[in-house]
Length: 222
Length: 302
Image 1: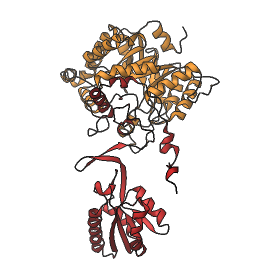
Image 2 (image 1 turned 90 degrees about the vertical axis):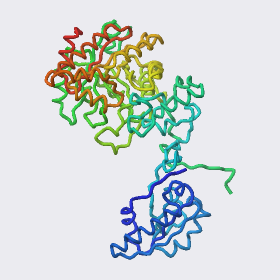
Image 3 (image 1 turned 120 degrees about the vertical axis):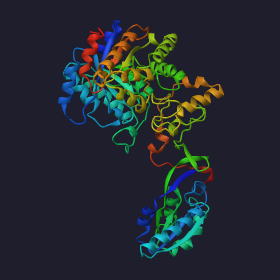
Image 4 (image 1 turned 120 degrees about the horizontal axis):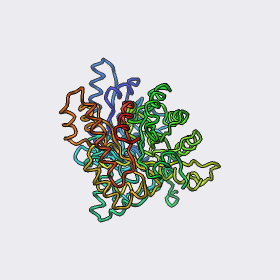
């Protein structure tokens, strides 16, 4: 999933303060799963904002709605009525969702209510970890299914740096050394020989380095 | 045999080599570099010039190395892949060679999180193994990474780092082999305080036949105080200072601790001299360059 976390309330207040009527629009997929922008978070945020504005003796009208996915036109469409009667929409979707809204509603003001963080998983209840950088050229096969591009702080492809100790990355005691995990996993799989394989410089052209990417599926174009 | 630098020549003659270290200043003051040059010249075969070590912004290692070349003290220019993509890397290697720099030490680099500007974006386009390979390929094929034939290809003596004290230990020798395959001519190790673990590492390297393919310079750093020992052990990534070494430093008066640190350093050098597969010593007297002359003389390395 794509993970996100809600922006600090003061930042949100600053973003929406210039408007009289604001729609808070949640997204029912990834950001719901990571507790940043689903229906529940929309409701809590709306209440908090109403209260904050009231305390400051400022008036604002806040409406709430959550669609299934803000990154797909057919779901976005459901928000059109409420968007039309508000001055601005605070989207609690990821950056892709916000921009899908902008493409669909070219004349409406759409503001981000969350910070999009990464492509990851919920490792345990309430704890999310980054697993994939979307580099466009997956080599998990050789690394025993642990991605050094994403999970090694130095993106090392030919083994761990000198800072790994007791399975922990030097940059943070809460971060596992990706190479330690790779070695553990290859040991389990009986594929330790993979470690000797020389990995050439990565082709980053398929990543964001090659500029914004586009995926074209000719067979699905109507 | 063709040698690429004075350091290379010394090592290829089978002589025990000594390298030192010079950290460039946090500013453009060449006086700081000149001062360190005066303290090191005549006592070491070459001097590592660090590349924004611990991710703190300093005078570039290329420029500081060029100052050493001018002063006829041979530099080992350190280069990290943290701050440069492959385009800048190759360009800087050519530039460095054109300035008379003949040794390079290829490193990943300390993560910027440790530095003075943790907000910076890092690069890590290629890793240190591929940096080694790039310098080697430029030298041996005369081509850049795109396969373009260079009019004058940099001919560098290529170094790499090894940390026998990092985990996973079993992997350390495989990584050394990978660096040798990539083209490392010499290795400088992390500071050695845990001599037992170092001996085990060099034994494994000997068994794999690696020490016949590469020159290994054992790293030493004289401890100035017990506090420094504790700080390094706890705060410096990849550092292993055994408890008995810290206790030994603690056991002497504060004013005598620097002398004790030098003594420990000399004992380590003595052990290194007797080890098969060790071809020299790399003395990293961080901001304590004046002690290098003493160590070199007392260890009978001149």
